[in-house]
Image 1 (cartoon, rainbow, N blue to C red):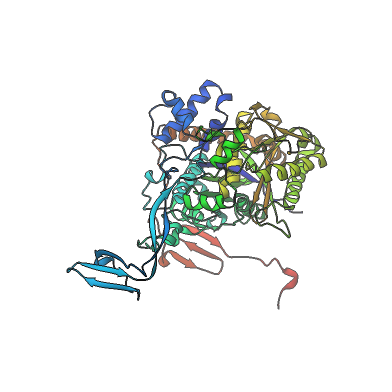
Image 2: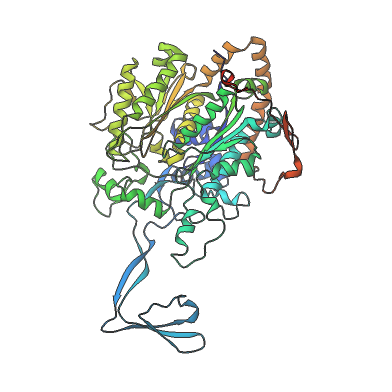
Length: 619
């Protein structure tokens, strides 16, 4: 059996409701109360830099209040006054409706029951006999008032020439740049070591770009009497995050795309990245997702399904009377008495090297991605209801971990990042799956983490939030508690599981693996098996000589210095996102095509391929 390359996690970055992912700052915001004062202050400083504040400690309470899940803020929309159009049918049979307006506002085709009379050069009088529907601009109070929003004051489009980009793509540029900086290696030095066709980028949005600068604007502009621009359509595609990373951050010529699986989309893309590295098709992979769904239109859709936690539902849970103030910080309550999930925005990006490249360049080891398992639910009654496919993905992911760390490591050194949305259906169905899987593999007190209680549910980017949280656990040694709940619900199965409702310390040296679980509408189930830095180092030391390992450790000292400097510079607000518009663009004159190789500028792509079907050659 051929030796397969190991996909090593060498960098990660992004932005969500807890802040910047690199440097474990978003994780540190989630576990803020359990950290040392020094760690707290550094994370407050990192958040202050995002929020445009001078000094984190002096704005401690403001920063804490304006991060994580909270009441929807005005930069998104006013939840007390959401604009909409009220249908207004009129009947002018007995008394025709009459009004004056400027000629330029007349429709191109005058309805047959309109009588138009000129009153001046610029104005006309219109009389309408019969029935006519009007749309009356008005407003109403929104039922859902909480979301996982980026830190108050952080606007990614202000950090580079965003040219009216949809918010999800602005966040993508920031996340990809953050991940790139987190590696601690110069991108030109990395790309010079690998062929251009050995770099892959897999990133997308489960729902596409649906805000006013993307598909949302395209669909409603004419309806609202406005002009459709040339940017709406192309920028709205679901795979556009990958396209932006290629075109404006990396300048990549390698494999690209997005695999969509609703709320499991990040793991679908991670699966492509793992496959590319294990097969040798790629040596460097950027995996990511970006979602910006905090708009009235998108939230209205989920609310109509009964999927979101409403203000009324939260009041009922807490026994509050109408008019009493809800604690929107506790809107998402995984595995407890709950009333729906809390939508969120997030962009997350992860960088993988094959193990040989990671060793050669002295890359920092944040962990490794062993495999992702994807299974459907089979026949379904409800497209949004849970099914049995997640049993398969979870069992396979745990079996993959067991095959590497053994029975002892499986039982003592792992955790599961639950999908944990905060809905009544999820709390019952996922807990049942986790409990039965743990029992089958002989595990007791298996730690269950539910990061959405802090961050909300970022749809396609959700597993990216879970993974960055896991990397933080492996760095700081603190399991984030499900602190938004009072108790686990009575209908939640807890056998063999340990639902942490408070932060809990663990021994980082004993941590071996994590299972990342995702469940998506339509029966899209995915579970990933990740190895910790400790386990990954042990795996690499088994493959490479002591001399090779010492050489890697020496090279890593410089990498860590650069990573520290990047983090310091980000906190000092002296680093801007990488955005290379119209930079180094190739044309036909830069390309030379040969039989054995193709060259584009300084890049060379080998063409001397052998057939994998040697036994099926045609003479």
